[in-house]
Length: 192
Image (cartoon, rainbow, N blue to C red):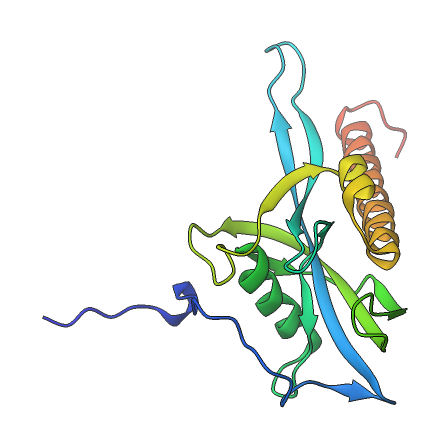
């Protein structure tokens, strides 16, 4: 008997290593990362609507004691979004939808005294994996945006987090306004 396994559900349990395929631009290593996020639904009394709370996933640094968002080298055989998703799977063990770029930052490595260019993307988490490549060297923790700002060790990742919150807030406000206008038009009291 032969069993067929879909490749989209398979995760390599080994992280890519080495710098042979790394991208550099004007001598700066190109890195990409994601801010994994989800909405935690908190149940309230049955008379009130449920309240959604934004949570982000941070990981422990492999070399230090700090916390950060998943990130790593952008390689020659992948797009920025593909690299960001790969790094997030390898380091944090989550998959989801990689959304539009939050921005580009130039920063100096704390350990290598070199300049880097970093690109960050939001990742709406759809699946949290039980096994992932760096599960034995990193801890992952879901936390509030406020808590993540406090523990994140990189200024540029904190800026990316602020941009994500601003983007999601604007999207949620737009959706709320659309719902209100649909309710107004649909209530039969409109002059339109």
